[in-house]
Amino acid sequence: MGLDRWGDITLINPGGAYSQVVDRIVYGIARHLDRFNVWPYPAKGTFNVHFFREWISHPTQRGAEFCDMFIAHGWNQKLFGVFKANLDNFRYTGVPGPMTRDFLIEKGMPPERIVIVGHPGMDTIINGEIPNDPTDDGRPKIVLAISHSSFIGHWAKLPIAFSEAFREAFNVVEVVHPTRGWRLSRDVMQGASACISDISGTIFEAWTFGVPVVFPHWLIGKAVIGNTPGSPLSRIYGNEIGYHIKAAEDVEETIWSAATEGITQPEIDFIDEYFPPRLRGNSGKVAAEAIKELAGTKR
Image (cartoon, rainbow, N blue to C red; front, side, top):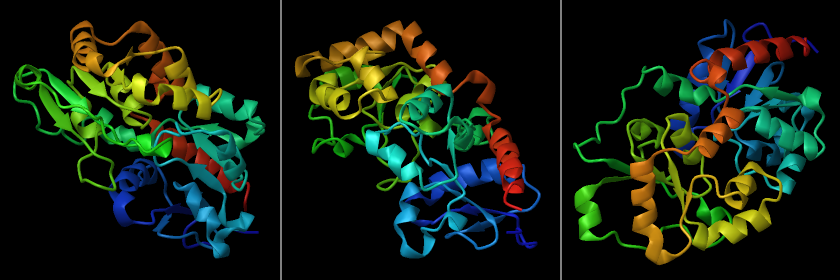
């Protein structure tokens, strides 16, 4: 089957609540392509790149012709055992680095169907093309970015109230999930003293910028380890990489420790394997080159 002349590659941005997230990814890739389309749905006769795996559930898009490649709009961190089965609908899967690649291979995905592309949506903020959000006020900044815990249970908001002393000492900047707010966590992360996260991609954004991460282990640790066996998330919680709160009364003390002691070596080692330094700031170019090469096999 030949590719259509009016655009060899289709980058699919369905719009809606995630549009600003996907916009960054599409821009990161598209500026390194000569011929491409951006549509809210797959296009017949082109190499279709998806950023949401859910598109495969639509009855008109289940065919292999429409499911060429998947690159997660996030960080591919929520990799349960069933996730690989969903990815089987795509000819290729783009991943942030060798850790996710190795996990999918262990789950049975053929290595030739996996492509390391980094995170194209991070290029603009890493390269300074988008200014860091002006949230600084002179105090050490704590990014509160709890957004995805409901994915493994019913808890979705940290059930604590910071003390007055804590609020006076730190500038707490809260960022909600992109479907509920306009601000992206990556845009306020640089210069932060610590980040409080759960299982969302803010973990990897923080570590990319050298920010230590605090985890509500006492609330969701057991569930993460039990529900995500062998996954990168299970490794984080199982090995207690970063700063892990073990009881409600330890919340502020643990955050203080992270903010004063800084990022740990295990956190650095983890992010270097998950999102290698060589891909930071040029993931879009790497992804575009891979897409062009793979699209050539569809001609």
